[in-house]
Amino acid sequence: MYIKKLVQSGIEKEVAKELGVFIQIIIEGAITVSLTQKSNDIFLIVSNQIKFLLTPYLNNKH
Image (cartoon, rainbow, N blue to C red):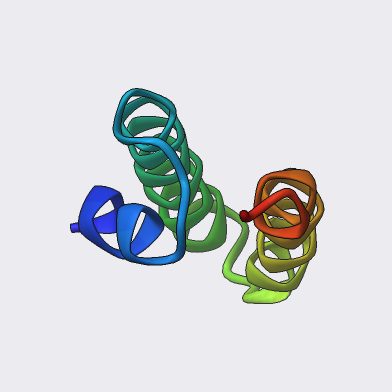
């Protein structure tokens, strides 16, 4: 799911595979934490960090 979007955004397929899996793990973990803590704040943190993680790859598109 994430891999296809990352590749469409210009990220190399091999890098996109790793990033896609990593993003999925982060989101699944955030869901678990959110349910445990009964708070949605974690999603804002995850969103900001995913943006931070992807920025170098998206800024280097050719």
